[in-house]
Amino acid sequence: MPGIDECLLEAMALPGARGAALVDWSSGLALGTIGESPVGDHETTAAETAELARAAAEYESFARAEESPGDGAVPAGPPVEDLIVTTRSGFHVLRFVETSFDSSVFLHVWLDRADGNLALARLRLRALAEGLVLR
Image: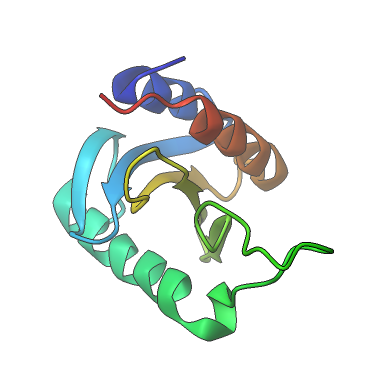
């Protein structure tokens, strides 16, 4: 089970990866970063992506509680699995991480549009988020 640094290194192994971060969306702080930032500053990128993540996680249109079939219980874990933002030059994939404490963390990877593989990034980030150990 990888820690933050190992997780970010693995994210950077994705085709077309330009930068990656683990961000706390409640505070907007980067818990770890690697590679480039779209705006040249990882803390600015963390704060801006945290705003997007917070909106998706808190607005009922995106994070509406759905009942499980049969038992009426609300599913555990973050209300949103991932977010994808497509720009003219790249892809941003934000994957929410389920934690044993108040889950307000997501992985963000920035991919070059010409070289990135969006489907592979989603699958790999899911696996990384599931195996991440936050210490």
